[in-house]
Length: 476
Image (cartoon, rainbow, N blue to C red; front, top):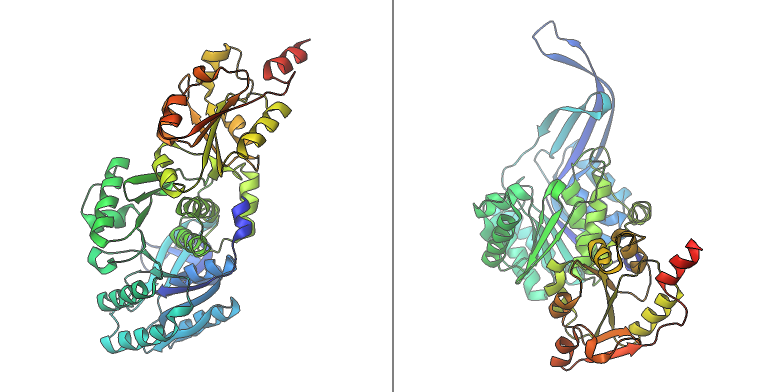
């Protein structure tokens, strides 16, 4: 994905509950003689940053300039977290050390990294109002340097209602977007955030609405968005992917992780990548797509971990997903139109069964007619109806991927009808392009485009170059 190469280092502030995730690897060796319970024999242990600290760690892995505002205990675990921050070049000038226990989650892993128990050591007492005022005072002096703020609320005592609202109001005054990984039942706490990221349980807790279906998720997300006055709600739905809701539109994407090993920290990875992409000026849909790929990598790892840009790049290549962000789905068309309302949209369509030089030259010329080129692609069923039972030679997934690989093609939209009329009506392009062998009056969608002041352009085909001709030549 070429967008990954455009991610530059931005100043990002992470605020939230930090913790230490510790893993004991070992085995169940026998039943205890003292009581009918298993005996766990520890063989090794490791500790990594968790909670908001994991968000910061992931942002550092995306080569961002990361600052963190939080509190840690003055104990050994707190010192260990500060050392990890230093190792990852995470700025700790806004960190306060208090006389409290640092949150630690100890996971016991037996054979095949099977988690058999978790031990939590934590102090969830809410910070005092005086501590909150000190943190806000420190933030006020530094807030102007940040492109975006990420808040990770784990309900471990840091983010009181007053502190949360103080942060959000301050950021709003400065025009700095804030994205929040939410928890609990108090939706008002998150008023004025730019984006909220609940999982399904958190969405249900915050709205008291049913979220078993896509329709239910969209309805609850819309309610939450309106209640909190935020621009977007991004709901992570586990194996079902993610659903982004905005003003009168929905963008749903499936999960891409094939080998789900451990979902710990996946939400932290998602919000970190979304933040880095938004800070770099990416479209929200592209930001979510990239975060989705990063989450697919994270869940294949054991335990809490970072996901680097290089890992995402390699994953996209090996999973043949490098151009997946170019596929324009019907439920994203309204968002597409809103985003590109000031751009000149060019549309053409075809089967593109065996991509050849005639196609390449045709599409290159079409791309020159505007700012964004969308290629409507006949589905397999549509091609079969138009060309016969032996077509297509290449399935729609392969044909779409080949088209997406072309740098001058911005989006590919697959349609199942015999003609692209419905798709053209939804897209409302400014320029409609067809081959030179068409009569202008016979071009499907001409009326739609011209009704809005657009134009129809016929581009001559390359003589002697066609998919049918190639197939006939192969058969001979």
